[in-house]
Image 1 (cartoon, rainbow, N blue to C red):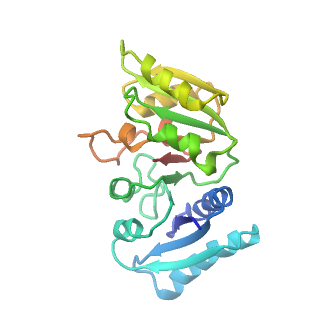
Image 2 (image 1 turned 60 degrees about the vertical axis):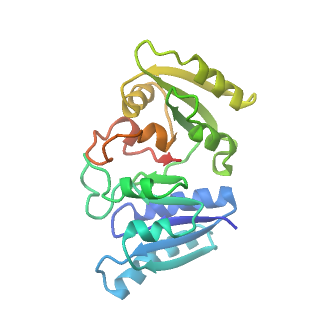
Length: 245
């Protein structure tokens, strides 16, 4: 059975992390492991934290849930988890109120793992329409492949956006995207932008999106600085979860 890892801390994102994990686990026929990595809380407080989220899921009818307190650095514990999908909040307990910064572990987790990572918003909202963000490189296919093959996204409406620089030819990537869709109905657009966030911000101004999918290659190209201080519009819109694959 596949496993969805839900990373829980004392932030206000904890319930949302559990809800997103449950949504994916149901669609993937996967189990859920609730993970808290030691942060100086007492044993009783750590167990209470995990029990609270487990109880929240149980009340929703989710039964295949295990709980674990990990020892070591957060990134190492997550990287060794053997999960098929990792779910964590966009911000943790130390940065949950900082709208201009991602959580301290986000960049490191994305670089230390190759499995899909879902970065959640504070509140889980119904997911029906997915925006797949592509760059113009035809070799970067991870986001498109994920959207087309992952059971968590099966049956959802798709929009595909190809980010292009001014004057750049995106015909090859758009043709590839249409071919990979294999007849599935979807909107495919080319958007001129200098970064993924700008493309998403412009796109979402006119269309509603419930989930964003982007590859590591498009989000974190070689030589790009670590993710951290950001403008929280567009890609990191507060109400829209993001999957990095």
